[in-house]
Amino acid sequence: DAGITQSPRHKVTETGTPVTLRCHQTENHRYMYWYRQDPGHGLRLIHYSYGVKDTDKGEVSDGYSVSRSKTEDFLLTLESATSSQTSVYFCAISENRGSSTEAFFGQGTRLTVV
Amino acid sequence: GNSVTQMEGPVTLSEEAFLTINCTYTATGYPSLFWYVQYPGEGLQLLLKATKADDKGSNKGFEATYRKETTSFHLEKGSVQVSDSAVYFCALRGDSGAGSYQLTFGKGTKLSVIP
Image: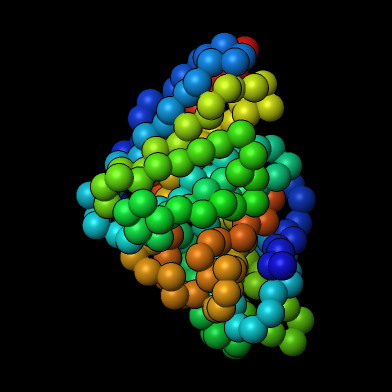
């Protein structure tokens, strides 16, 4: 199994509070991604990183920010959580950007905003 | 942009039945195609992939053939087992531009296999 750890695995938070999810990898892969998984939508890309301090927006980036200060860590922050951000969040990594490159996924974080 | 359409679920089959999950895609160039599987409570795992037209990916008895003429990558298995119960995602990664950074997923198909 690829060395990807997401924390926390479960979190309940109140509307309007900030929340940070962490993804930690031990594979030294350059590319890291945050996806959210919702019924009827599959997985949608929130943000991705192609190196330390290099990040870009994905399909559903509104309300989220990310940071990558070290190769191994990619943080996802909800500045002010809303109920629409209740979801399961997955971190993924890949070694390079080639089209045939496999992505490896973490176990997911289930976030509930009440 | 890139997109993936896969058959809606859920799909319920009896053990040893034949499985087909349809997947079609829209993309420019020559994307790579993937099937991922998600078992309950877990993250996604790569099941198989194909990187060019007419390639066949296979793993654990599952197969899928990259058909560029029909832009399809249907997943098949000849005899399903209870342990195959999971959610299956078709995905593509483009070969140029912004699409090459990310996987584009279908909505997923939940398969339940009953004894």
